[in-house]
Length: 260
Ligand SMILES: [Zn+2]
Ligand SMILES: [Zn+2]
Image 1 (cartoon, rainbow, N blue to C red):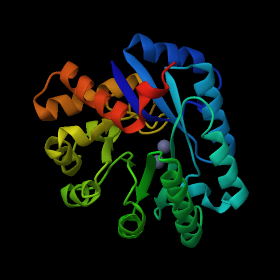
Image 2 (image 1 turned 180 degrees about the vertical axis):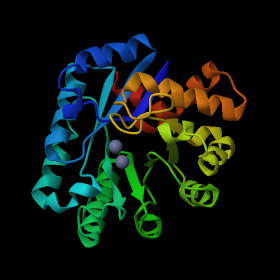
Image 3 (image 1 turned 90 degrees about the horizontal axis):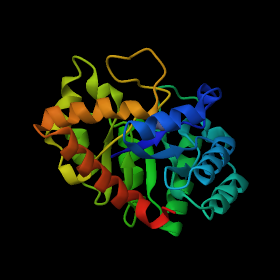
Image 4 (image 1 turned 45 degrees about the horizontal axis):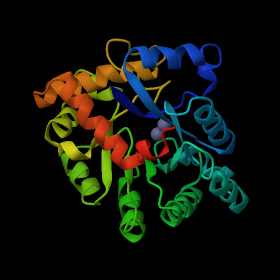
C-alpha cells in the first residue's frame, strides 16, 4: 500500500468524479491520503471528505499562503474547532509563497505564525508550502519549530536546502510529480540522498502530474509513479519504498490512531 501524503481531492476539478477517483486510488493500492485545506471552505470540505471515507481520507485544515489575506482570528478559531472532527490529522497547508505573492508578505508571515502556534498548541503536525521564501520560512521555524513536527510538502530545493529543512527534528521532505521530470537532477540528487526515515510521497493533485501524464489532471493513484521514481533513485524495490513511506506517513500523521 501507499499513502498519498498531500492531495486536494476536495477541489472543483474533482466535482464530477470524486468517488471514482477515490475508488481508483484504492484499487491501485493507494489506501490512504491526506486532503489539505487551503482556506476555510476547502478545510470544511476536507473534513467532510474524511468523515465520508473514514480510514481512507484524512484531513488537514489550514490557510494557504495564497489565501493568507483571508486570515482572521475568527478563521483560526474555526480551524481549531474543525480539528476536533474525526480524521483531522494536521494543520495545513500553510507556509509562504513569494513566487506568486497572491497575498502580501506580511499577511503570509502573520497567518503562518498563528497556524504554527495552533499546531503547537494542539500537538498536530504542520504541512508547509515553500516557494521562493526559504530564508523567511527557516527564520520563522527557528523561532517556532521547537516542539513542532511536520512536512515540507512538494519539496523542490537542492541538497543544501534539504539539509537545512531536515535540521528540524520531526520534519520530513515530501516528493511530488516533479521528481519524475527529466532534467530535474538537483531534486533527484536530494531524493537519492535523503535519510529514508524522513521521506514521504504525494501528488498535490490536481496539480504537478508526474511523467508521462504531465499536462493532464493529477489524481492520487498516480503517486505510484513518484514512488517508483524514488525507488529507482534509491536502488530499492517499489514494495520497499511503499513500506518505508507508508511507515513515515503513519508516524508523522498518526494515521493508525485515527483509523476507524
Ligand atoms: Zn503547496
Ligand atoms: Zn497543496
